[in-house]
Image (cartoon, rainbow, N blue to C red; front, side):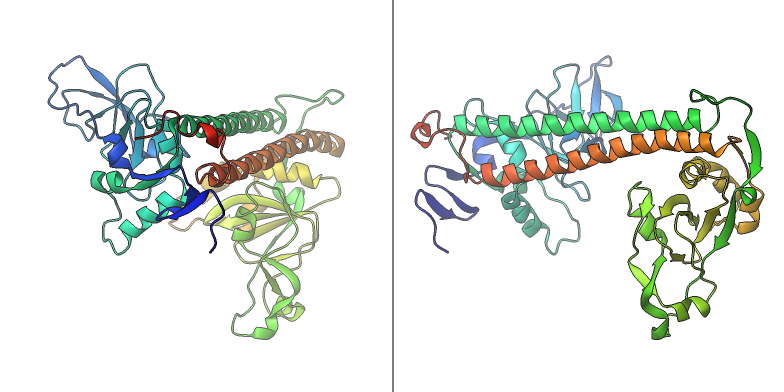
Length: 422
């Protein structure tokens, strides 16, 4: 493959001519500070486990440890330390440590990297831990290993392309800005989901009424709100029962919607002959399909006629019941459904149990529809945020591929000799 002018082929890929491939151990200190046998009984450290880190963010810290206690952690942390996760399944749980408050230590599942000030930028090293060139090196180290982990020596041997320090800093700043935007979207999404959950608890119990509605709600059995049907599976040994034109829903089809409430298609189809030969039924569109075995209470509204396997109970609402309201109502009853399955190693709720299960609902369909509209608007807002977050993550990934390989340079090449990494 021809390499364009100004670039060179290296062991980690094509990089600009003025970049250098270096081993991490040559430009950083690894595991630089050990807590050792500290005997101060009053010294307490915040402990970071591998599980506390997600997508490069410190989501929590597991516990506090006294310095004198027998500890799984002896790595004492400083601002801008890079924590390299070394153990599967947490090999992507890397962290750029940015805390200045308190005393911190981390699990021995991390190798701690401390960059040389003015020579190696910690943010640049951190983002490279997620880059393809580093991941390929780690996978090569793990191949054939009975214990899927790397050690400090492996981390020191990892090779990274280094530009001048000012370019490292510019790249780290750009990717940090992308991370900050992603984190702000994640936090907003958590808040919106919490608000929706609170709204469901208020609106679906009658604790909060919408303007224009009054009067007591009614206690009804689910069998009074909808026709409840089960599903079935045609014989898998009869090919004529399969690959027809009738969507056949399994629990996976619902769970992969990831809280999106409408079901338009399924991964498998059955034939009309398959329906006739089994206990499967065709469920009219705008019904609510609900998982009833193993995973209890996951729901979707089928926008097309479907059939389901036996792991479902399906609700076709009567004329005076809004299907969207029924969907949200059923979603709030999961714990009650699970309670009915208590004592069984294989959770399953039956049709007879659901028919007599009591819920409280508005007396008018108009109020049901109004409540469902509020919750649907919140769902739409959450879906838009999820799409925005997914786009931001894709853009950051694209930025990493361009910036960490030098395809796009943020500092003019004529200044590349300034503060060069050594």
